[in-house]
Length: 379
Image (cartoon, rainbow, N blue to C red; front, side, top):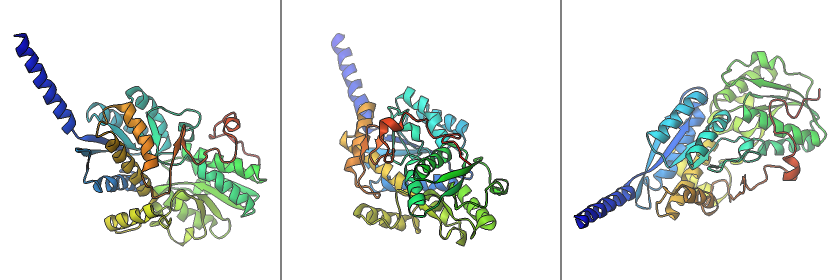
């Protein structure tokens, strides 16, 4: 009898092992597919799909199953969709996440669930003062490119007085904060900051607050908000006060809806379609054939995310169930996968190109984080 039971157990173990091996690798995508940020969210999803299509949705003998969820740009919806992806779909990795407020809100759940996650969203504190163990980011920190713009505005453009207007979330606060700190350290002054709600599409009440006697206005807007802001800024201040800001503003995800009002806009960005390296030429060929148009930065970043997932799974012979090993493999994959943006390496808190600009990290971290009130305005 004991021998018979042992045989049954052995057969069950073999069947279970086979089932796990043949099971799909489940990738959860969470992002805005409806609402004013939908254009960016759809580009993100397309970029991820392009990476998986190159592998015919298979790696290490396992199928890749992509499960898409629309967070509608709403934190409450995002929480509900996250729970569904984890509890019902049993995903092995979470990708996507566009809005910074959603990115921050999901962190406690990700850490509790020990779920390897690969964000696009850019909140500074995720890689500065509050790094999360199970979260990697395939993108920049919000203030990172804006530090460079602050330096350029002061030293090259010779601006001295600038007003800021931006979306009222972490991406806006941290982007403007990064610009302001470097700009003011170089001798300039941000004389006013105006915050615009994420659902606002009429900018007239906010543009009337912008002083006309400044050298320029610096902005942080993306996707549908960027398109509407560009048009209304052109009508109110175009040709009189130069506009500079985040390069996401004039990314292809928004630029196709803009007109001559953005000619002359200066922004900083981590990627461009014209970037001349072998990996980007390959990506552009794939993307233009698939999309029949110029891809956006959101395509490029999520294409990279998908390739990191594939490379990590391959390096583990498909054993993505070992979450800590899978997370470590994702980190290594960033270095071994050719990227359209150029060589990438993640240090202890992720972006190897300094998120601290030229400041010493230990001294930088002693100052308050960039937020709605810091750095303070000096009229």
